[in-house]
Image (cartoon, rainbow, N blue to C red; front, side, top):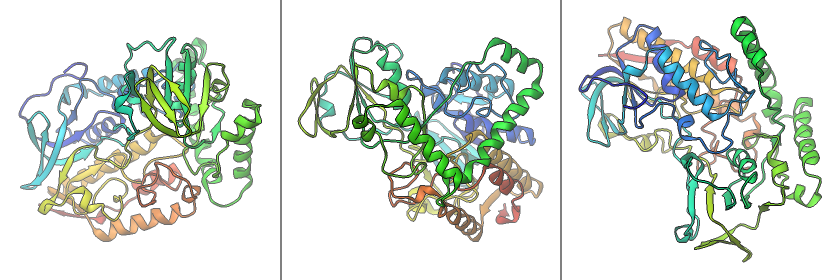
Length: 493
């Protein structure tokens, strides 16, 4: 397959990993280092990268500093900016695949449709009708890959172009076009400033405002990059410093309790808004009515200024319905458009994507999670033997790099499989009481965070339960998984 090598047809494996984004790479590298080399990576596309392969919209970049948003064991001295653009991140992912000899273990074009537990292993079937058998199955599909496309009234009548931010057509020319952007959150704050540079008109449809902190992005010069390349310990120190700083500020930023640090963050967000938007009427429309951190905090230096350009308008009337030539707001105002951009995020509760998982006795993930999305140590699932997750429930972050969490999960997974192998066991099942204790520990921590405040966010499921975020520091997560007792599992087979 293009970009990821060829995999031998018909060969079954000890471990099958679904996905070749950062999650899949982390799992594969950790297993290989642990001496578990009989694995394959299943990829639905013709190239690796997952989220960063798909999200190539104008202005796409990371909101975590570049040197922290990379594997600790594979530093990259060649980042060109403090916050890396999407194309550089995707190039880094390709580099990692080649550097760790993962390309030839990939099976591209294998779009997993279902996985069924039978005869002591998992039968994985693709939408193309192919299948393979693996003793252990690792889902690394991530939570940010299924575009959320809201059911907007009349959108099917619109005769112009419609694109979700994660399905951007790089050949489309929006210059001198009238653009409507639906959404005002993470992807919108990156897209809007770029569109505003050359579009005839940009209308930003905002349902609710978001707190925005200054980004303070900058370019890394050739001298800095050369210095990091020649003196690797400087890069190690730079990354360690950023990691420690993020963890140090975590509790002050996201605790429900009042603190000087929390007051300072609120003041910083308000001052950023006041300095960026002098018009009091516009500023009022951009001021959230919930505490900083309840929803995802955004980082941008150019979004608020972009909203004040002559060719940009902020629309807060609500959507009445789309027409053939644009849309009408809820108060009847007509807005003409050539392009509608859906900056509406992802279906974050679909942690297995569109894959059907059938466990013992036909138990499905939907049935198992009817009372809430959960996992043991964010990696293993009760009642589903030999099934594991990367980027699982309650492992997402609001303050640091997800790659830190992925490395900890991957090492934990490798240690668990080594443990089973050393005892000649072919079946691993988490004990119900262990999972219950872990989720109680997580929920106790979440109760002390600002995320429980009254606001709508993708951190919560339909019942309002926080299923996504980790409530403690990343250091604590690493320690918890590194020191986790392996007798929390039943080994058999």
